[in-house]
Image (cartoon, rainbow over all chains, first blue to last red):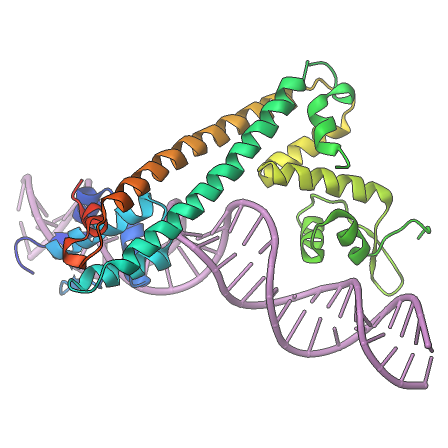
Length: 135
Length: 135
DNA sequence: ACTAAGTCCTCGAGCTACTAGAGCTTCAAG
DNA sequence: CTTGAAGCTCTAGTAGCTCGAGGACTTAGT
């Protein structure tokens, strides 16, 4: 309970991560458990801020919770090789690229469908036709 | 129970939609409930095949269940205007494009990170640094 | 010391769209 | 009549939070 300790709301404001989410990260073990006041309220140390920011960045980049867990473990082993980290990042990039490709195909299909529609009644609607098509 | 009726496994094979998923679509009201044999097994009419294919196409295009529901309702009103359908499709396309943009940004960030990494130890790893950065 | 506002606590449920499994019944072929 | 495939229901699990109920704590002001 030093002066620099933060209550959960303060931590939320400092990091931009929601209060409920912070508690959730504690529950699932991403963020180390905070100390507690006599009344049971959490108080966080500056190290928690760092760690939470790290987690936030990872999530913003789309890493799964499991991957974040691994990245955190790695980050703590300062003289381990960064091989694993690089591999994880590359695998994730690959996954992102796959999603991109899929989404682009999807975009085109939608464009085609919408383009074909000239308005009018459902019975002549090209969009509905396209969706109903047997192939 | 006409001859053309299908059991759930047949329907699954015909449409490429899993058995469990078909039952699920029945439960949530996307697919009308099937008739039952005396023993309680579902038997589907040809109209179910059509409907299920429609649903499948919608899902492949990324429409949410709620949107599929609306599209199905619309598809049944053959002389309604297809305005709503077109609007739904356009909104969905917009959403897809937003996701694409976000994913592309993400792809670039990951590329940058990975590119910056020259191997070595965690304490010098650019990837970890990037993830830990306070901004 | 008392009060009121604001913040925090736990626990449980809900979201999307399925998917998997246990334990049991029905169906169709031989 | 037996056997094996396929069907049935019901429950729970997935990812990653998010929300709400009902209550406890903290702190500033009086």
